[in-house]
Image (cartoon, rainbow, N blue to C red; front, side):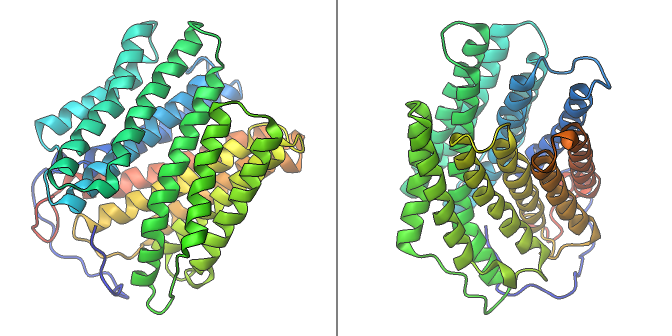
Length: 397
């Protein structure tokens, strides 16, 4: 994904190219599908949770399932299908094969609403495997060993989908929440790897002279502690161990973010939104440690990761890569700034509203869900024509 050395101070839009390009490259359908699904799924869940509508999903586990294995996995798929082509200069699915991948994902979203347990399990588990195969072929052809691990992580996500479904079915004695937690650990690792690669680069390219840095030891500790957190969760180690790992990881990621000099990004929305999202990873790890020590109860840590980090990072990356890969200037307009502020407000209210006062818990869920819906609704309105039309510069993709 190529970045210009300098950001223009004023957007200059070429003439629109006629045509339909939704199936040209992976980011196009999956960013659109993910944002549509995310907006309405969260709104319906918040309405169900507050008793305003009848059952949409049968419980919080399925809400977590859909946001992790539905929304987040779709964004990861769109990003990887696009990035792998750039990394390898090899084709990734487009046209009919890309349509088939999208249909598989849509099928998973429909089947979880039906009583067809086996079909829902197989289709949902098949999607990350299909994406893994789609990116493995170009990676192997190009011998791009640096990124082979993404294939393994997608296969691991598929295994965790099966685990959660079987646990919900009662096929073995395992909490489905553990399966969701392990999936969040995997997604956290993907975010810190991709974030560590692109956020300093985007910062230095977008704001010349910033000198965002990466320190080898900080990198090792930051990534290593996330892996250790997955291992601790998988082995169900004592909560004191999980707390220690989470708090050390929070310090490492906080120092990592400090080296990226976030305070210099405030005038550049396409950059500060990524820094703000990464800051929520630090908040998540701190809250995870406090929860493990019984100093905090509830799902506040999980929502710092899902609403703040995942919501902010995916929205920021979906905006930036959609602009970059359609030949548009890397400058945020009013729509994008509003989206970024709304997602931050949704995270702050969802996480800290209930912590500040238990009496605000329900209201915080309702208001946060509404803000999330509006943020992603704006993305749909702004980016549907961008994602569906050819690049402005006439290049393929």
